[in-house]
Length: 376
Ligand SMILES: [Zn+2]
Image 1: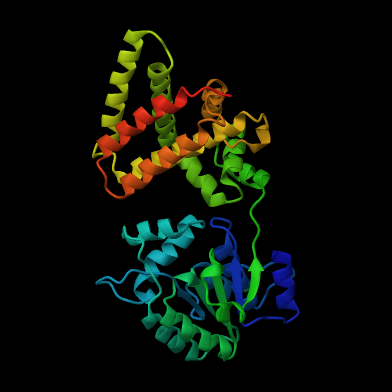
Image 2: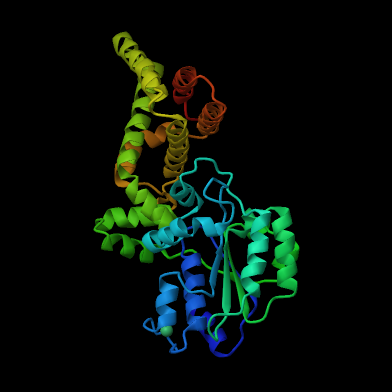
Protein backbone atom coordinates (compact mmCIF):
# COMPACT_ATOMS: atom_id res chain seq x y z
CA UNK A 1 0.00 0.00 0.00
CA UNK A 2 2.82 2.38 0.94
CA UNK A 3 4.57 1.45 -2.28
CA UNK A 4 1.48 2.34 -4.28
CA UNK A 5 1.00 5.63 -2.50
CA UNK A 6 4.63 6.65 -3.00
CA UNK A 7 4.48 5.72 -6.64
CA UNK A 8 1.32 7.74 -7.25
CA UNK A 9 3.03 10.79 -5.76
CA UNK A 10 6.20 10.30 -7.80
CA UNK A 11 4.13 10.02 -10.94
CA UNK A 12 2.27 13.21 -10.04
CA UNK A 13 -1.06 11.44 -9.65
CA UNK A 14 -2.28 13.27 -6.61
CA UNK A 15 -6.03 13.01 -6.01
CA UNK A 16 -7.38 16.07 -4.29
CA UNK A 17 -9.34 13.93 -1.84
CA UNK A 18 -8.57 10.49 -0.51
CA UNK A 19 -10.33 8.37 2.06
CA UNK A 20 -8.24 6.01 4.19
CA UNK A 21 -10.59 3.36 5.57
CA UNK A 22 -10.25 0.18 7.59
CA UNK A 23 -10.84 -1.12 11.10
CA UNK A 24 -9.59 0.72 14.17
CA UNK A 25 -5.96 0.29 15.23
CA UNK A 26 -4.17 -0.45 11.98
CA UNK A 27 -2.37 2.86 11.50
CA UNK A 28 -4.64 4.69 9.04
CA UNK A 29 -3.94 8.11 10.53
CA UNK A 30 -0.20 7.43 10.67
CA UNK A 31 -0.28 6.39 7.04
CA UNK A 32 -2.13 9.56 6.08
CA UNK A 33 0.46 11.61 7.97
CA UNK A 34 3.32 9.78 6.28
CA UNK A 35 1.66 10.40 2.93
CA UNK A 36 1.36 14.12 3.67
CA UNK A 37 5.00 14.31 4.69
CA UNK A 38 6.21 12.39 1.65
CA UNK A 39 4.12 14.62 -0.57
CA UNK A 40 5.79 17.73 0.81
CA UNK A 41 9.39 16.65 1.52
CA UNK A 42 11.59 18.31 -1.11
CA UNK A 43 14.29 15.64 -0.67
CA UNK A 44 12.21 12.48 -0.73
CA UNK A 45 13.74 9.33 -2.15
CA UNK A 46 11.95 6.46 -3.85
CA UNK A 47 11.64 4.83 -0.45
CA UNK A 48 10.69 7.55 2.00
CA UNK A 49 10.72 11.18 3.06
CA UNK A 50 14.22 12.38 3.99
CA UNK A 51 13.22 12.77 7.63
CA UNK A 52 15.77 15.52 8.20
CA UNK A 53 14.79 18.63 6.30
CA UNK A 54 12.87 21.43 8.06
CA UNK A 55 9.67 20.37 6.30
CA UNK A 56 10.00 16.78 7.52
CA UNK A 57 10.77 17.91 11.06
CA UNK A 58 7.75 20.18 11.09
CA UNK A 59 5.56 17.36 9.81
CA UNK A 60 6.94 14.92 12.32
CA UNK A 61 6.09 17.29 15.14
CA UNK A 62 2.69 17.91 13.51
CA UNK A 63 3.57 21.61 13.44
CA UNK A 64 3.86 22.34 9.70
CA UNK A 65 1.85 25.46 8.77
CA UNK A 66 0.32 23.66 5.77
CA UNK A 67 -0.80 20.68 7.83
CA UNK A 68 -4.33 21.11 9.15
CA UNK A 69 -6.52 18.86 11.24
CA UNK A 70 -10.19 18.34 11.78
CA UNK A 71 -11.42 15.88 14.40
CA UNK A 72 -14.44 15.41 16.66
CA UNK A 73 -14.55 17.58 19.76
CA UNK A 74 -16.90 18.39 22.59
CA UNK A 75 -17.47 22.12 22.99
CA UNK A 76 -16.14 23.37 26.31
CA UNK A 77 -15.00 26.64 27.85
CA UNK A 78 -11.69 25.94 26.11
CA UNK A 79 -13.29 26.58 22.74
CA UNK A 80 -15.61 25.31 20.05
CA UNK A 81 -13.31 24.50 17.14
CA UNK A 82 -10.46 22.04 16.69
CA UNK A 83 -7.79 24.70 17.09
CA UNK A 84 -8.62 24.90 20.79
CA UNK A 85 -7.76 21.22 21.17
CA UNK A 86 -4.62 20.99 19.05
CA UNK A 87 -2.36 20.45 22.03
CA UNK A 88 -3.99 17.23 23.32
CA UNK A 89 -4.46 16.18 19.69
CA UNK A 90 -0.77 16.39 18.89
CA UNK A 91 0.07 14.75 22.16
CA UNK A 92 -2.15 11.72 21.62
CA UNK A 93 -0.75 11.14 18.13
CA UNK A 94 2.87 11.59 19.12
CA UNK A 95 2.63 9.56 22.34
CA UNK A 96 0.26 6.79 21.36
CA UNK A 97 0.55 6.38 17.57
CA UNK A 98 -2.46 4.07 17.79
CA UNK A 99 -5.65 5.29 19.42
CA UNK A 100 -9.40 5.24 18.92
CA UNK A 101 -12.30 7.51 19.68
CA UNK A 102 -12.56 6.24 23.27
CA UNK A 103 -8.89 7.09 23.87
CA UNK A 104 -9.46 10.52 22.35
CA UNK A 105 -12.43 11.09 24.64
CA UNK A 106 -10.30 10.21 27.67
CA UNK A 107 -7.57 12.55 26.43
CA UNK A 108 -10.17 15.31 26.21
CA UNK A 109 -11.41 14.38 29.67
CA UNK A 110 -14.96 13.90 28.45
CA UNK A 111 -17.06 10.90 29.36
CA UNK A 112 -19.87 11.35 26.91
CA UNK A 113 -19.56 9.95 23.45
CA UNK A 114 -21.20 13.02 22.04
CA UNK A 115 -18.14 14.45 20.35
CA UNK A 116 -18.67 15.71 16.83
CA UNK A 117 -17.41 17.95 14.08
CA UNK A 118 -19.51 21.08 14.40
CA UNK A 119 -20.70 23.33 11.61
CA UNK A 120 -18.40 26.11 12.79
CA UNK A 121 -15.46 23.93 11.80
CA UNK A 122 -16.34 24.16 8.11
CA UNK A 123 -15.78 27.92 8.30
CA UNK A 124 -12.37 27.20 9.78
CA UNK A 125 -11.56 24.73 7.01
CA UNK A 126 -12.46 27.31 4.41
CA UNK A 127 -10.43 30.01 6.14
CA UNK A 128 -7.34 27.80 6.48
CA UNK A 129 -7.43 26.60 2.91
CA UNK A 130 -7.83 30.06 1.49
CA UNK A 131 -4.53 31.08 3.05
CA UNK A 132 -1.57 31.05 0.73
CA UNK A 133 0.46 27.92 1.25
CA UNK A 134 3.54 28.36 3.36
CA UNK A 135 6.04 26.60 1.10
CA UNK A 136 5.84 25.32 -2.46
CA UNK A 137 4.13 22.18 -1.27
CA UNK A 138 0.59 21.08 -0.77
CA UNK A 139 -1.80 22.22 1.88
CA UNK A 140 -3.04 19.11 3.63
CA UNK A 141 -6.34 18.87 5.46
CA UNK A 142 -6.59 15.68 7.50
CA UNK A 143 -10.10 14.91 8.66
CA UNK A 144 -10.15 12.19 11.31
CA UNK A 145 -13.49 10.40 11.76
CA UNK A 146 -15.33 12.46 9.12
CA UNK A 147 -18.42 10.39 9.92
CA UNK A 148 -18.70 12.62 13.00
CA UNK A 149 -19.56 15.65 10.86
CA UNK A 150 -23.09 16.83 11.31
CA UNK A 151 -25.12 17.25 8.14
CA UNK A 152 -24.47 20.99 7.78
CA UNK A 153 -20.71 20.49 8.09
CA UNK A 154 -20.80 17.60 5.66
CA UNK A 155 -22.64 19.67 3.06
CA UNK A 156 -20.13 22.47 3.32
CA UNK A 157 -17.26 20.02 2.99
CA UNK A 158 -18.96 18.63 -0.07
CA UNK A 159 -18.85 22.06 -1.68
CA UNK A 160 -15.13 22.19 -1.05
CA UNK A 161 -14.62 18.75 -2.52
CA UNK A 162 -16.56 19.81 -5.61
CA UNK A 163 -14.41 22.86 -6.15
CA UNK A 164 -11.21 22.13 -4.30
CA UNK A 165 -8.82 25.02 -3.59
CA UNK A 166 -5.55 24.83 -5.53
CA UNK A 167 -2.60 22.80 -4.20
CA UNK A 168 -4.79 21.22 -1.55
CA UNK A 169 -5.15 17.62 -0.55
CA UNK A 170 -7.92 16.29 1.68
CA UNK A 171 -7.14 13.11 3.56
CA UNK A 172 -10.17 11.60 5.27
CA UNK A 173 -9.50 8.86 7.82
CA UNK A 174 -12.58 6.82 8.60
CA UNK A 175 -13.65 3.58 10.26
CA UNK A 176 -17.25 3.93 9.15
CA UNK A 177 -17.32 5.23 5.57
CA UNK A 178 -20.85 3.82 5.22
CA UNK A 179 -21.96 6.68 7.49
CA UNK A 180 -20.65 9.32 5.09
CA UNK A 181 -22.85 11.04 2.54
CA UNK A 182 -22.76 9.13 -0.72
CA UNK A 183 -22.07 12.43 -2.47
CA UNK A 184 -18.89 12.77 -0.43
CA UNK A 185 -17.91 9.16 -1.04
CA UNK A 186 -18.24 9.64 -4.76
CA UNK A 187 -15.76 12.53 -4.67
CA UNK A 188 -12.96 10.83 -2.81
CA UNK A 189 -10.58 8.15 -3.85
CA UNK A 190 -10.90 5.31 -1.36
CA UNK A 191 -7.83 3.55 -0.04
CA UNK A 192 -8.76 0.43 1.89
CA UNK A 193 -6.18 -0.44 4.51
CA UNK A 194 -6.23 -4.16 5.30
CA UNK A 195 -6.16 -5.76 8.73
CA UNK A 196 -2.66 -6.44 10.01
CA UNK A 197 -1.35 -9.98 9.85
CA UNK A 198 -1.42 -11.95 13.09
CA UNK A 199 2.31 -12.74 12.87
CA UNK A 200 3.19 -9.08 12.52
CA UNK A 201 1.11 -8.15 15.56
CA UNK A 202 2.63 -11.03 17.55
CA UNK A 203 6.15 -9.89 16.67
CA UNK A 204 5.39 -6.32 17.69
CA UNK A 205 3.96 -7.54 21.01
CA UNK A 206 7.03 -9.62 21.68
CA UNK A 207 9.14 -6.51 21.34
CA UNK A 208 7.13 -5.19 24.25
CA UNK A 209 8.44 -8.13 26.29
CA UNK A 210 5.34 -10.23 26.15
CA UNK A 211 6.22 -13.92 25.99
CA UNK A 212 5.74 -15.70 22.71
CA UNK A 213 2.72 -17.88 23.58
CA UNK A 214 0.82 -14.99 25.06
CA UNK A 215 1.79 -12.68 22.20
CA UNK A 216 0.44 -15.19 19.68
CA UNK A 217 -2.80 -15.68 21.65
CA UNK A 218 -3.38 -11.95 21.97
CA UNK A 219 -2.52 -11.34 18.32
CA UNK A 220 -5.12 -13.88 17.24
CA UNK A 221 -7.78 -12.39 19.50
CA UNK A 222 -6.96 -8.89 18.19
CA UNK A 223 -8.11 -9.97 14.74
CA UNK A 224 -5.90 -7.67 12.73
CA UNK A 225 -5.94 -4.59 14.94
CA UNK A 226 -2.70 -3.65 16.68
CA UNK A 227 -4.59 -1.28 18.96
CA UNK A 228 -6.93 -4.09 20.05
CA UNK A 229 -3.85 -6.20 20.80
CA UNK A 230 -2.28 -3.46 22.90
CA UNK A 231 -5.50 -2.99 24.82
CA UNK A 232 -5.85 -6.72 25.37
CA UNK A 233 -2.27 -6.89 26.65
CA UNK A 234 -3.00 -4.04 29.05
CA UNK A 235 -6.15 -5.67 30.25
CA UNK A 236 -4.45 -8.82 31.49
CA UNK A 237 -5.07 -8.05 35.14
CA UNK A 238 -8.69 -7.15 34.64
CA UNK A 239 -9.03 -10.20 32.41
CA UNK A 240 -7.90 -12.47 35.23
CA UNK A 241 -10.51 -10.97 37.50
CA UNK A 242 -13.19 -11.43 34.86
CA UNK A 243 -12.14 -14.99 34.21
CA UNK A 244 -12.25 -15.86 37.91
CA UNK A 245 -15.70 -14.24 38.23
CA UNK A 246 -16.84 -16.24 35.22
CA UNK A 247 -15.48 -19.48 36.66
CA UNK A 248 -17.05 -18.77 40.07
CA UNK A 249 -20.47 -18.18 38.53
CA UNK A 250 -20.55 -21.38 36.51
CA UNK A 251 -18.89 -23.62 39.10
CA UNK A 252 -21.44 -22.78 41.75
CA UNK A 253 -24.33 -22.81 39.29
CA UNK A 254 -23.24 -26.32 38.33
CA UNK A 255 -23.00 -27.44 41.95
CA UNK A 256 -26.45 -26.13 42.80
CA UNK A 257 -28.05 -27.38 39.62
CA UNK A 258 -26.40 -30.76 39.09
CA UNK A 259 -24.72 -32.15 42.22
CA UNK A 260 -26.76 -34.11 44.76
CA UNK A 261 -25.00 -33.25 48.05
CA UNK A 262 -27.37 -30.84 49.89
CA UNK A 263 -24.64 -29.24 51.97
CA UNK A 264 -22.57 -28.47 48.87
CA UNK A 265 -25.65 -27.12 47.11
CA UNK A 266 -26.38 -24.87 50.07
CA UNK A 267 -22.79 -23.57 50.25
CA UNK A 268 -22.75 -22.85 46.54
CA UNK A 269 -26.06 -21.03 46.59
CA UNK A 270 -24.73 -18.89 49.42
CA UNK A 271 -21.61 -18.16 47.38
CA UNK A 272 -23.73 -17.17 44.39
CA UNK A 273 -25.60 -14.70 46.58
CA UNK A 274 -22.28 -13.24 47.71
CA UNK A 275 -21.02 -13.25 44.12
CA UNK A 276 -24.05 -11.19 43.03
CA UNK A 277 -23.47 -8.74 45.86
CA UNK A 278 -19.83 -8.24 44.97
CA UNK A 279 -20.56 -7.94 41.23
CA UNK A 280 -23.26 -5.38 42.01
CA UNK A 281 -21.06 -3.34 44.33
CA UNK A 282 -21.33 0.33 43.46
CA UNK A 283 -17.53 0.56 43.42
CA UNK A 284 -17.45 -1.76 40.40
CA UNK A 285 -19.52 0.61 38.30
CA UNK A 286 -21.85 0.01 35.36
CA UNK A 287 -19.14 0.03 32.70
CA UNK A 288 -17.19 -2.79 34.36
CA UNK A 289 -20.38 -4.73 35.00
CA UNK A 290 -21.31 -4.48 31.34
CA UNK A 291 -17.78 -5.37 30.32
CA UNK A 292 -17.93 -8.52 32.44
CA UNK A 293 -21.23 -9.55 30.86
CA UNK A 294 -19.77 -9.05 27.38
CA UNK A 295 -16.72 -11.02 28.41
CA UNK A 296 -18.95 -13.83 29.70
CA UNK A 297 -20.81 -13.95 26.37
CA UNK A 298 -17.53 -14.15 24.53
CA UNK A 299 -16.34 -17.01 26.75
CA UNK A 300 -19.60 -18.93 26.39
CA UNK A 301 -19.28 -18.60 22.63
CA UNK A 302 -15.66 -19.82 22.78
CA UNK A 303 -16.63 -22.79 24.94
CA UNK A 304 -19.41 -23.75 22.57
CA UNK A 305 -17.06 -23.57 19.59
CA UNK A 306 -14.48 -25.62 21.48
CA UNK A 307 -16.83 -28.60 21.25
CA UNK A 308 -16.37 -28.60 17.51
CA UNK A 309 -12.70 -29.40 18.08
CA UNK A 310 -11.47 -26.86 15.57
CA UNK A 311 -8.74 -25.10 17.55
CA UNK A 312 -8.12 -22.58 14.79
CA UNK A 313 -11.60 -21.20 15.43
CA UNK A 314 -10.86 -20.53 19.10
CA UNK A 315 -9.68 -17.20 20.42
CA UNK A 316 -8.73 -17.64 24.04
CA UNK A 317 -5.84 -16.98 26.37
CA UNK A 318 -4.06 -19.86 28.08
CA UNK A 319 -5.89 -19.59 31.42
CA UNK A 320 -9.23 -19.42 29.62
CA UNK A 321 -8.37 -22.50 27.57
CA UNK A 322 -7.47 -24.36 30.72
CA UNK A 323 -10.90 -23.84 32.27
CA UNK A 324 -12.56 -24.63 28.96
CA UNK A 325 -11.13 -28.13 28.81
CA UNK A 326 -13.52 -29.05 31.66
CA UNK A 327 -16.28 -26.53 31.08
CA UNK A 328 -16.90 -26.71 27.33
CA UNK A 329 -18.97 -29.95 27.39
CA UNK A 330 -21.60 -28.17 29.49
CA UNK A 331 -22.27 -25.59 26.79
CA UNK A 332 -24.14 -27.23 23.96
CA UNK A 333 -27.00 -26.95 21.48
CA UNK A 334 -29.64 -27.33 24.18
CA UNK A 335 -28.57 -24.35 26.29
CA UNK A 336 -26.11 -22.11 24.45
CA UNK A 337 -28.68 -19.78 22.99
CA UNK A 338 -30.60 -19.36 26.24
CA UNK A 339 -27.40 -18.68 28.19
CA UNK A 340 -26.29 -16.08 25.68
CA UNK A 341 -29.73 -14.46 25.79
CA UNK A 342 -29.68 -14.23 29.57
CA UNK A 343 -26.21 -12.64 29.60
CA UNK A 344 -27.27 -10.21 26.92
CA UNK A 345 -30.47 -9.39 28.81
CA UNK A 346 -28.48 -8.72 31.99
CA UNK A 347 -26.15 -6.43 30.03
CA UNK A 348 -29.09 -4.42 28.69
CA UNK A 349 -30.72 -4.21 32.11
CA UNK A 350 -27.48 -2.88 33.60
CA UNK A 351 -27.31 -0.37 30.77
CA UNK A 352 -30.83 0.77 31.63
CA UNK A 353 -29.76 1.35 35.24
CA UNK A 354 -31.64 -1.64 36.64
CA UNK A 355 -31.01 -2.90 40.16
CA UNK A 356 -27.62 -4.61 39.77
CA UNK A 357 -28.02 -6.94 42.78
CA UNK A 358 -31.24 -8.33 41.41
CA UNK A 359 -29.92 -8.54 37.87
CA UNK A 360 -26.85 -10.53 38.89
CA UNK A 361 -28.72 -12.84 41.27
CA UNK A 362 -31.43 -13.51 38.65
CA UNK A 363 -28.64 -14.33 36.28
CA UNK A 364 -27.26 -16.89 38.76
CA UNK A 365 -30.67 -18.56 39.06
CA UNK A 366 -31.04 -18.72 35.30
CA UNK A 367 -27.60 -20.27 34.95
CA UNK A 368 -28.45 -22.94 37.56
CA UNK A 369 -31.43 -23.97 35.45
CA UNK A 370 -29.67 -23.77 32.10
CA UNK A 371 -26.38 -25.44 32.99
CA UNK A 372 -28.15 -28.67 34.06
CA UNK A 373 -29.97 -29.06 30.76
CA UNK A 374 -28.87 -32.40 29.39
CA UNK A 375 -26.95 -32.57 26.20
CA UNK A 376 -28.89 -34.46 23.55
ZN1 LIG B 1 12.36 15.92 4.13
